[in-house]
Image (cartoon, rainbow over all chains, first blue to last red):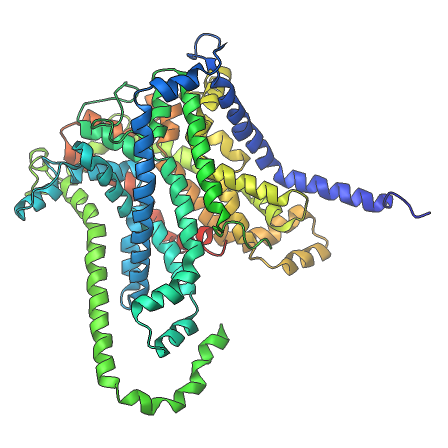
Length: 317
Length: 301
């Protein structure tokens, strides 16, 4: 005799609650569908089409995919550069950021000054920072090579040398390490003090203390830094593009078609290639294939890294 | 907190005898450590600040000297800054940057707060999935979806050549802001919300009169990050505003500025500093909110 459905008042409450949740979530639900779901599906659709943004798209099967993987001369260098930057930049950023973080926690006088000094470059707009670095590292007129010259050091050509262009970008990125420093600093200050005291009483040296006390406590944050670093570097675009354009010295206005990645495609990244194909060569199909490659790599890397807890979804409540 | 700070006290009386003997050596070691740490820190800090110094010194040099690689200006040409400001278009770039960053921030905050609140405090089926989807949008390179989006804005809505295709989507939530705000709202105890409900507040009233005031630091952090994101954005304006110089922002215009003044490094450096200045000025006013925001995204998930 028990009612199979809940009392009408209860049911009405449940419905109201669900509507309320939907209402609060609606900005994101709309945004996700329109500005994320739709374009993702459309990218897959266009990857099978020949489309130059003027004529109507025509179906060409896997031709764009084959073109990108088998014929496109710049795909190899762009992929290589992106992966090179992902590995080198992320590794150095984490090591360097942790080092600066440790240094700041050890400082006892003038903490505010040091924190600000290390944080400030992170705030510099990427374009402005890149313009500044292209000037600072300019082989002819830049102050860095002037100083190195005075010291009798044979300075490299930085952004103008294919072998040094990517390391120069890494230097630029290390200059803006401020965000990682703050994250690591907070994590380091969270390590329980008693553990340090216990380690000291046991007579542990600095390295042993780091290995057995500090490191286990900060691994989630290091994982977080690695995951977000990989994702950010997969998107690496502005600095590489601006550095390449300015260092080439050619007076180029926006919209002008130049071979990206000066010198010798050494700074060409996959996102730059997407832009170049889609907005300069109007080869929409190939650009979409490349977008999907970027998507696949980003997804693969993040799921792989997220599996080993990255501290992203803990604290459910 | 209090427990850990008071704990060592009882142990102290039993130790002074053991402590006194190594005192001079220990103190010398502490002093040496202090010197070593501060020397390294100072040297590193100087390296971080030197680029700013060189950029500034170059920005007040004469045209010729800026080409010479010399470090100290012979004469201080403050007029370089006036010259940058009088460059055609420069004032428009300021206006566009402020419009993009100002409206973008306002839209983002208004649309992301309710979503973050629901994700942090409502219990509903699919909450975990929703959170995972938010994080995955946060993780995705913007280049992955830009082509179809551009085609819609340019061909169906005829809005390319303006900043609206960048500003309008911000009225529909921003994954990064939602994530950061949710982390912040998780720290607000449920009891506050329950007592508001008992007092007869509706969900919207609770959000506006209880949650928002308590979440001010988190909202401030989100607003700052979004402002800087827009101010620094290059890719977005390049996609949508490139063909119309009247819609360029400072970040986008700066690179063109260098191309147009291909030999004038002094003017370029002055312009570079002018683009950096607002960001750095805002940082000094809102340091606390900033640092809290950064740690919130990274620590204690």
